[in-house]
Image 1: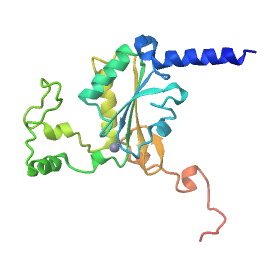
Image 2: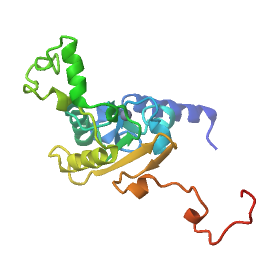
Image 3: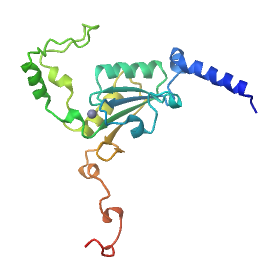
Image 4: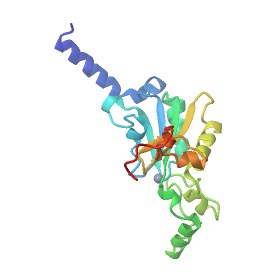
Length: 217
Ligand SMILES: [Zn+2]
């Protein structure tokens, strides 16, 4: 049996390597070699939804976690994914979006109009103060906001974009998931209305034959 001195030495050495593991590049990946793209919504509990400890040291830090409005693929999401996948040993991508998302709650055109009403020139907004080369073409601001018509369709599209993106190698596993905010439940994105409304609300839906002994009549 190891002495406490030996155990402490091992623990200290392990922590020292953990603290500087990023300098090892692909040989110092996060615990699950995982990059998560998730909506910033405070009601989307990434760790609970995925069963991981995304960006806390508890358990070592399972993933690189990127959050933005909607959990959608944007230029900075691509930048972050490119880095973790090509240089930090990440092998898997999860796209995590959710029902009741704020990005479903308004029409992007109305948001543009509201900003214009405040006197903002939406066609001349710095996209990245340190990168003036990056700019939007006139009229593109509304699209840039990224409001969604349908969270499932958007999630599926984001997965497809990442799978096809030239900076994401073909062997990277990419999947998308939708967190049902109302039910605290994770499901695969789908456009099947029955699947989306799926709840076991009756005995029939659980395969029970015949009527129950009458009590709730
Ligand atoms: Zn959201």
